[in-house]
Length: 213
Image (cartoon, rainbow, N blue to C red; front, top):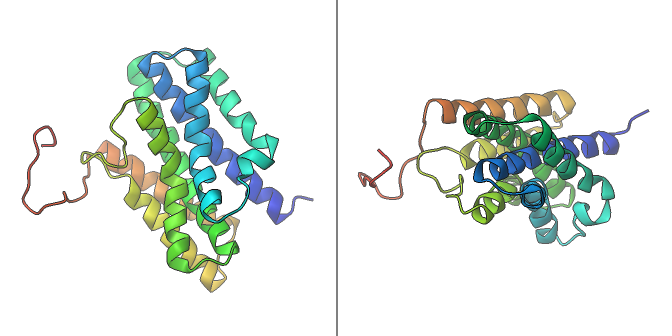
């Protein structure tokens, strides 16, 4: 019988895999070799969780459980053998990134709350877990991080997901079903924001920057 800890591990590994695929897809688009693809997959898949665990002062799961090393390898091989075409890669990158975002904003928040952090801190760590890997991926690949790109909404869906997760945990309503609903909502919001070019307000009211119109 699978217990709650096993379910949490499987969900976390699935999130690692989705983000790792996004890293390998970006590596393919940038023309990296197989080693570069594996590195970018590892950064994208494991970066957010490592940052979260270091903040809450615990050994990062990626360093204590070898199972976390499997998804980046699988993602690298999957992209290497199955995907081709820059346009197709670009579209799939957003889809896999959104899937990872939806899962990690939940797992990051839940782990933070399990360690006794304040709900606000739990939300912040949930967002950190969700966006940290993508931030590292984009910086290493010399891309404008999606987190800071004014042409896209990235952190807001993760913040919504982390907030809803905190609310569900606090009221005792958090379970696999409600978690799946939150993850789906975050995924849908992220993909819709990309598809319809929804944007967050700029830093200064009425300020228009060249290239963002």
